[in-house]
Amino acid sequence: MSKDVWTIVSIVIVAALSALSVAAISWGIDNHEIGFGFWIGSLLTMGIMSYLYADNPFYKFTEHLFVGVSASYWIATYYWTQIDTNLLGRLFPEKTSFLGMTIDFSRHGHEQNLWYLIPLVLGLFMLARLIPSIGWISRWSLSFVVGLYAGLRSYGYLQSNVMQQAKETFRPIIIPGDFWAGFNHLVLVVGVVSALLYFFFSKEHKGMFGTISRVGIFFLMVSFGAAFGFAVMGRISLLIGRFDFLIRASTAENGYPSIVVTVLMVAILSILAMKNKGKGEDEDELFEP
Amino acid sequence: MANDKSFLERLGDLDRRWVFIIIGLSVFIPLLVPLGLEVVTTPTTVDVFNAIDSLPAGTRVLISFEYGPSTQPEVEPMGVALLHHLFRKDCRVIATALWPDGQFMSARLFELFEAEYDLEWGVDYVNLGFRPGAEAVIKGIAKEFRANYRTDLRGNLVEDLPIMDGIYKVADVDFIFTLSAGYPGTVEWILYAADPYNIPMSSGVTAIQVNEVIPYVDAGQCYGILAGMSGAAEYETLVKKGDATKFMDAQSIAHFLIVLFIILGNISYIVGRRRQRSA
Image (cartoon, rainbow over all chains, first blue to last red; front, top):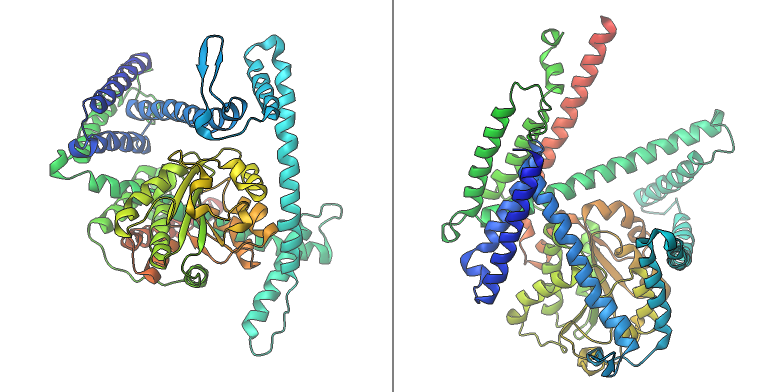
C-alpha cells in the first residue's frame, strides 16, 4: 500500500477510536474494567517502538496521532487555564450580556482588571500572522514576550548563577583534618578556571595558556561524559516504564493486549519486510515508494 | 574487503537492530525475574531525606509538578516516596504545576494517597493546578500568590481553603520541592523563589537534568537532589515505601551492557584503524 492509502487508513482508525471512546464514556463504560486503555496503550507503545526496526505504517500512524492529540490537548489546556480563567475571568468577572449572548466568568472569583485588555490586544496581534499582509503586527507581541523574558532571566541568572555560583567557587583548599574535602575544592577551582580560560579567545592557546586551556578541555570532556551517562540512564528509565506497562497489560483478564498487539505487529512488519526484500529500496523504510 | 575483517572489526559493523534487541532483553528479563541487586544511597539523596525528615508536623510544603507522561516512569516514583514521607510526618502539601500535564500527574498521585492517609482537600493538601507562563508565574506568586491562583483545581476559592491561611506570597510557604523534567522546572524555582526569598528547597529531577541542577546543590542553593530513577530508588530505601527499587536491576544490567558496547565499539574502531594504517 502507498503512503496515501496508509494516511487514509490512519484517519479512519483515529476517527473510529475517537467515536468508540466517546461512545464508551456516554454508555458509562469504565475503561479500567474492559481494559480499553491497555489495548490503546499497547498499540501506541509498540507502534512507536516499531521504528527501531524500520520506518513503517504503524510508526507513522502513531507519530501523527501523537502530534495531533498533543496540539489539541495544549490548545484546550491553555484555553481553560489561561484565556478562560486569567483573561476573560478578569475582563468579565460579572455575569453580563454582550451582543445577545450571556457571558459569565464569575466562577473564577476575580475582580475586574481592564489592564488585561493589553494582553488581549497583543494576543490578537499574534494572530495577525495568519494574514500575510498585516503579519508584521505580530512582531510587537513577540517583542513584548522577548523583552519580558530577557529581563526576567537576566535578573535571575545574575543573582543565582553569576553571584552565588562565583561565591561558592572560592572555597578553602586546605582544611585541617579533612584532606579530601580540600582536594575536592582544589579540583573545583582548577576546573572552573581552566574551563573558563578555554573559552577565552582573545589570546592564542599556546604555551602556559594553551596548557591550562587543554586542562579545561579535560574537565569539559568529563562533564560531557557525565551528561551522556545521565542521558542514557534517563532513556533506559523511560524504556523500563514502557516495558512495565506492557507487562501489566499482558494479563488474561484484559485479553492479553500487549501480547496480541506485539504478535500481530511483528507478523505484519515481517510480511512488509519480505515484500520489500530484493527490491533494492531503502531497507529502513517499509513503505512502497 | 569485508571478508578480510577480523571478528572484532566485524563487531563494529553489527546491525544496530541487534543492539536494540539485546538492550531490550536486558531491560525486559530483569523486570520479569528480579535479581534484587542492592541499592546504595548517595549523599545527595540522603540530603533530601534529611531536609524533609527535619520538617515539623504541620509544615506547608509547596510541591511543583513539572513533568508529564513521557517522563512519568522516572519522576513519579520520587513523588510517591516523597508524599509518603510528607504525609507520614503530617505535613501539608500545596501542589502547583508549570507544565500542563503536571496537574494531571499530581491529581493521579493524590488519588493514591487520599484514602491511605485519610486526607482532606483544602486542609491536608490542595491541588492548585497549572498556570502557563513559566518563570513569570513564579515571579507572580512571589509577589501575590492569590492573584495568580485565585481558585484551586476543583474551583474552590483559594481564600476559603484552610491550608492557604496566611499564604499571600511564595515566601509564606515553609519548603519548596520540585518534581522536574525540564524547563520550566527546578532551575527556575531556584532562580525566582528559593534564592531571592531564602526559601528552603529540594528537588527530584530526571537524570538528564542532573548536570544542570547539581551546581546549585553543590552551592547549597538546593538541599540535595533525587537524580532520576536511581535517586527515586535510593529515596525509597530511606523512606521504606515505593516501587522504583524493583526497576533498578533492569537499569543496572542495561547500563553494564551499554558500557560493554561502548568498549567493544572503540576496540573495533581501533583495530580497524590499525589494520588500515598497516595495509
